[in-house]
Image (cartoon, rainbow, N blue to C red; front, side, top):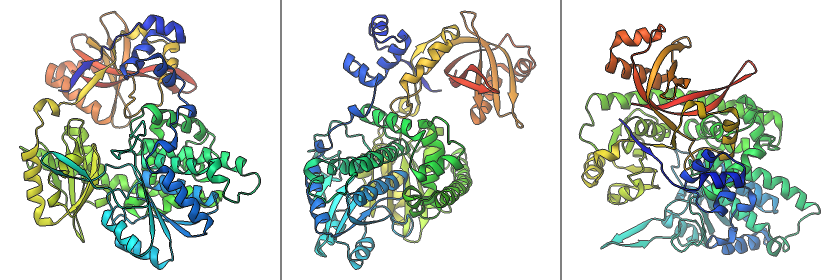
Length: 599
């Protein structure tokens, strides 16, 4: 069973609530998210663009701006080289749009996942050299490309790195030597010598900061900008901010501090976006004209961008974001949606095979799952790893065959810093990179057993670490939740990693009745009464609903559970963790409670 942890961060909830005209429970929820001072509370409640940090706090930002302005004035050819995931695609679009706005002779290339792999390589550099490129600007990659950047320099090219990944290092006797690439400028908030206040930004935000930094009087004044450029910049700035917000959610960055302010601002703009590409994607997903949420970005729109890099080429996603003709954008958006539908099928197949291996005992004794799926397409290895991590709460690496050897992706749990653990066995890999929660790597096939063995020998996780922690905001009677209070929950949005939906719990609930909805009965509605005599209906979906029914059957037997489904409940009790949300059906709004966990 999961660990339930009741958050008990104290404050004078009543007084603070009166000051900001919010319910004391809202104050408790804000406090539970690590917000302490009144200044932090105000920034949290009224998060806006004013909370963004100065781009020049990023190390080497001044170098990057000065160098690129010189290249623009010299009319040198500039190439942006990004990555094939949502962060890489959005950051590439941001830099390309920004550089072209400033008058640069710029183009962009996104590596092919299979043919090129992640980040810079000699093939991409040779191609740039042959095309007469003078300067390469990386985004969402480059921090680990020391050899490739040195090679580019040997050909006379200039490289500017913008990235957000961990800086590679060598460790000797407990001391780390950071291995920064020898580029003309290296803009990465993860640099040890970087004073930027919030290191948790994604590659697209770093790219956005670079463009914003260049649109400063001391730089823009040296460029021959046409009249009206300020109005055009304001429009472009709105679009670039939306792309940065899109990537922040899609790359699962924590929605804290600047990230939360940026995403909140971006979502508001996206509801009436002027971006032709974003509008087309919203339209084909049936979301145009509706309020856009972080959920939409992370689970509906983002996967369409990622799917192109997995199944075809991410260049199509870049074409969509760069599109300025509605008809072309709609065609591309439709193709992205179709590819994502295909990706879902491949993912289900890979996940099913991985689960079968685990259930058959093939990974018994492994604290870190290293799952070999030879027929799994390398592009979905990371998604499958994420699914397995969620199901078994184990650090998971999924490895598959490619023409160059084995490639894999890993997804981790909070107690296991994946990049640091892979760094301890770096000699196994031909290439690897990542951060605390995720990683990608390549290795010779014969070294796969050694990878499994050494990762598990090094692992210090305990059984407690393998139990997922469920953080409960409060023990809340159902009767406390009113329409007015639920409306106030919007002050806490956007929800996501680092700023989760409020989660409540009630113990010793009495099951009054149950029913199944849908053609296959995959939605469960459970009518319960709490110890305050408050009655509510808890909702469960799909696999969670099946698992809950099995839990009740194991505890109370098939007969009593069947009686509950026929309106004869009264003997079954359980505890539930849940969150409230609005349910809108046929123009009617009602409060519903979604069950997240149970015991």
